[in-house]
Image (cartoon, rainbow, N blue to C red; front, top):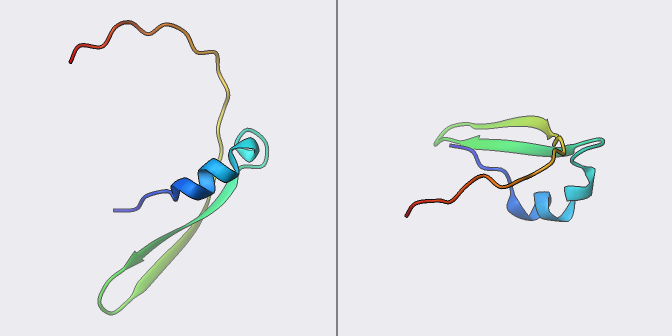
Length: 55
């Protein structure tokens, strides 16, 4: 499983809609380490009322 680094996204959130944020996903096994560079981009959209949530 891979997860995006929360600190990197929080610090560079202004870059999401324009150039994106370069992120390196890493998976380690006992013998190998696999790195995959990706670029995360966001698209701004209007938010609105989505209804009540039921707990």
